[in-house]
Structure formats: C-alpha cells, structure tokens
Length: 123
Image (cartoon, rainbow, N blue to C red; front, side, top):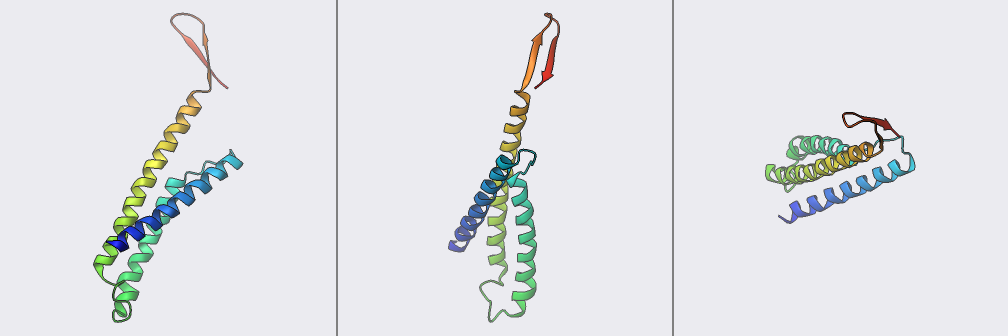
C-alpha cells in the first residue's frame, strides 16, 4: 500500500508540474493552446507501456535480483496509480476546456435590433 501511495504522489507531482508549465506557456504565448491534462495522459500511457515492458520482460528474467518489481501485483499497483492520476488529469482538461469555451463565448457584442432578432458580433 505504501508503494501505491508513493507512486500516486509521484504521479500527482508530475501532473501538477506539467499543468503549471503548460499554463505558464499559454500565458507567455497566447497563440499556443497547450492542455496539460491531455499531455499528461499521453505521457502516462507511454510510461505505462514502458513499465509493462520492464515488469514482464526485463525484471521477470532476473526475478532473483528484482523480485519486488517483477511481480504482477506490483505492476497492478503502479497501473492503478497511473489510472487514478489520468482520471484527475482528464477532469482538469475538461474543466480547462469548459472555462476556455465560456471565455470565448463571453466576448461577443450583442446589438438589439428588434424584439425578434439579435446581432452577435465577435470582438
């Protein structure tokens, strides 16, 4: 259980760092549209593939030396921590996308021309 909590804390620290870095890049260059949540999911999926390769191919051949890392239960703990952090990253990505859509929709100029129609001019 302590390995799971350590893996989860590490993944959340990486997620927070990536979210902050993407936010700072978006502030520095407004033409970029980096979403840290989606980038983290891609990074975590790649890490999970490499982790499975190491667990079941490399560490399994040297089980006497890397016994605690080569067990399937250790891999399941690491995969669960990746999955939980990815779910949180997708939640943050969705919140960011919704906030950006609301910000874009809020910048329209509405001209009341008649009771039946309205003109929306983007600003």
